[in-house]
Image 1 (cartoon, rainbow, N blue to C red):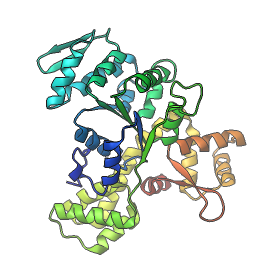
Image 2: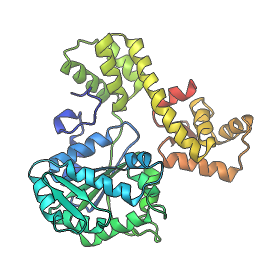
Image 3: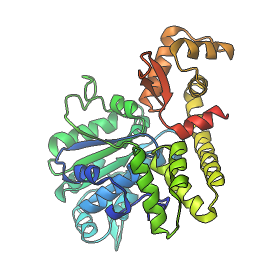
Image 4: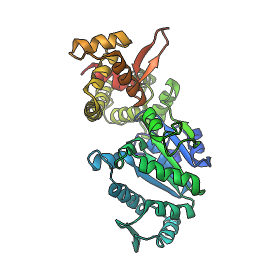
Length: 358
């Protein structure tokens, strides 16, 4: 069902993502990046691809980050691999358990596997290479908080796999696109991954007509008759981010109340944004002020600077440039030259409206 809020697991549960699924399933690149803004459907697409490949191992880096209090330890990474391997199904689970049974530090009892403290992830990956596994890491930019060297230990492990394990593939997703690129450092000669080629699959919000088609199909699946006027107005307000369209569709199917359903989406967005902004504040409170400025129309360099100054935050030009660049890398904002003048805009219109109302 399109309006099921949980990440999708089968191709038929997705809408108009055939090209992107096929790219993930058929690529032979050792490293593939699946990129896109928040709530655009990357986790669903990754899970569908891993399920179709049958030998996919799903790792959630964001969950590790929050579960470990903002710093990913080697122990938390081992436990996440353990969880992922135990969640395998069917014949692939038996083959994986068979090859891992010969790895030091791995114990197997029935249908459950345990990775001991002395296990080496490099040896786990060598075993997974024997079965041609695909390791999918969701929100991989959070691995820059792994270990004591900004994630370089993990990058070294990835580089070792890239160079030596010909049957092992990695798919990394990232909603903070620039940060993921910076973390991997394939163009940075100091990075363990320097010079390694990779493939990129970019997942974009739906254009208007596809957003309308998405809602129509979702309502049809639920046997709910909805007028074109309601659907078009919802798309005008929410744009094409699938996560928000799903929230609207589920609510409207229950209530048949357009305004109430749109309000429900924005309330959900406020809850989502609250946690995200707290995370940004820990990095710098100025990030939140910049987002508020842009959302409220202060979207040129000098207007953003003046907005910060009016709130007691006088920021040197070089520092403001760095803050804006970082927000772009985190995919919160993007440059807009449509008016002939460089402006900034919030990438997600639902988040933009919530910021305006703060």
